[in-house]
Amino acid sequence: MQATVSTDPSHAARRDRSIKLAVVTSFVSKAGTALFQLLSIPVAIRVLGREEFGLYTTVNFTLATVALLQVGIGPALAHGLSGAKARGNEGESRRLASTAFFMMLGMALIAGILLSAVLLSVPLPSLFGSEFAMKEGVLRPALWTGLGLFLLLFVLNLTDRVREGLLEASSNNLWGACGNVIAAIAVGVGVFFVPQVWFLVLAVHGSMVLAKLFNTISLWKKHPDTRPAWTCFQWPVAKHLFTDGLAFSACTLVAGIVEYNIAGWLVGRSGGPSATAMYGVFVSLTIMQLGFVMMLSTPTWPAVAEALARADVPWAKRAARRLYLYGSGFALCSAAGLILLGPWAFSIWLGKEFADTPRTLLACYGAYFVAHVWRHLNHALMIGTGQVGRLARVQFVESALVAIVAVLALKWGGIGTMLLSMASVMVAVTGCSLPRLVAHGLRLQREPAPDLAEPAKAGYGG
View 1 (cartoon, rainbow, N blue to C red):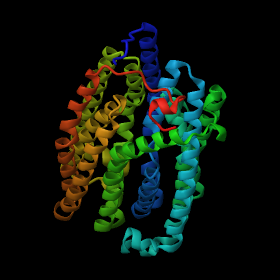
View 2 (view 1 turned 60 degrees about the horizontal axis):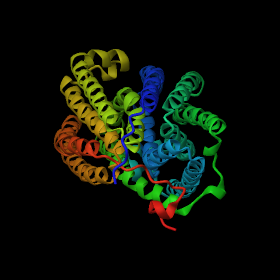
View 3 (view 1 turned 90 degrees about the vertical axis):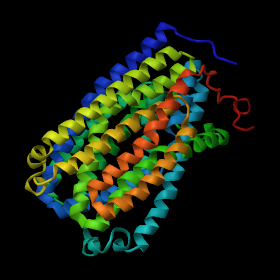
View 4 (view 1 turned 135 degrees about the vertical axis):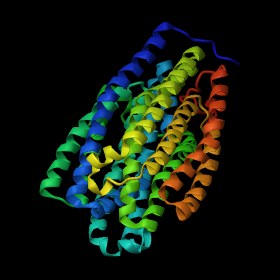
């Protein structure tokens, strides 16, 4: 049975307004993040030195891997909250929010125990390579500091997903901007008074934890139905969130593990801390620039999901075209600018140790970044159209191929060849197949989202 098409102007206006507000506030937040990266990275390199900064980058890669271990229940949570909001069902919202909170709390505890055992029992050179043998005194305190912070983020990141499901991504951006201010102050204190890797980890990631904590308190105050209550935890809902989360993790988080963490680890084992520092700069550029694309993609996919829940397909198609146009245009302009001005910009931004960065290497990175952004746009719209399962299958194939070509290309050609090979695989797999699947999803007339208030009827068990 097809849903009745709902093109109520008030709903469309609310979605447009939420996206516009999210973009404006996100610009403030992302501009602050970019400015923070532009200033903090060269300062850290000059104070710590290239090798010490390579150690900080190694810690970040490791902690990012820890963060990627969490099951990405965000899409199912956001879809469920969008449907509950459309129906005015506060009981369903409470069950979703409470179940998600206690799920992530339990996963954080389990991950903390397992990773603590690894840090206590495994020599760090066995994990990072023989060139890190004399750096355990610097690495270990930073890893312990970061582990505690990232386990807190396991739970606090749920607030961002809840806000997105309620079409309140602008609140995430405002609190993110506050976190940037706190981080800038903390890094400034660390550079002049505590120039240690562990304190830099605390300054950067601890500020993020603090901002997300205040965002969570603000959310619970504004939306009491999202406050966690153990009596609202439901196993059928948990099963649905966990199953969808595994699929989402496979399609997005695995890609991050392969391209950031595994590739960074391979570069470190091949070239040591200095090569890791160079690859870390590319990763920082990717994250920093992708943030500007996410200004639009982050509020767009929940809005597309809500529009399709109301069967407002015309609005969803307009939003998809807008996202494709903005994201791909930004990526192409960024790559062109990096190739033309990169060597000059690197010498000013990062100092003389990076002044000789080859233009060919920057071109290879530019190709990777364009492919990366194109994939991200399709990821967002696949999630918005409710095709996480299909996305997972396609992305798993691509990530496996990327890992293989990364190993071979790094061995025979270095970082540039690795980046170009990874980009080629991304274009050939997700770059070609996902746009067709997105178009298919936008053509479908969808039934209203199931009501989790009736688990048996919704198909989640008794």
